[in-house]
Image (cartoon, rainbow, N blue to C red; front, side, top):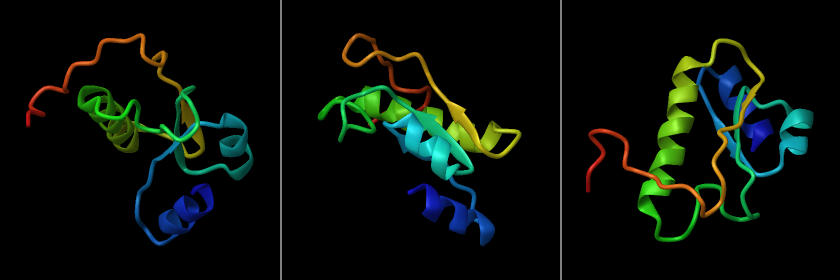
Length: 93
C-alpha cells in the first residue's frame, strides 16, 4: 500500500496508510502512516466493534489533515481489546 500511496501523492491525491508492521512502513516510506500494534488482518480493529473502527478512521483522517511533514509514522497507544472507544463527536448511526 505504501508504494500506491506514494504514487497517488505524486498525482496530487493526499493519502494516509494504516499498517500493522512498522518495519515495512519504515522501508517503503508512505507519505503518512498510522501504525497499530494489533493482530495481523485487523487494521481497523475487532469485527463488529464499530466504535473502535470509527475511532481508527477518525484518527487516520485527522493525521491526513494535520501532518506537517511527509514520512511521519503515528502510533496511538491503543491496546487491542483493552480500550473503551466512543464514537467521534457527530458520528452517529
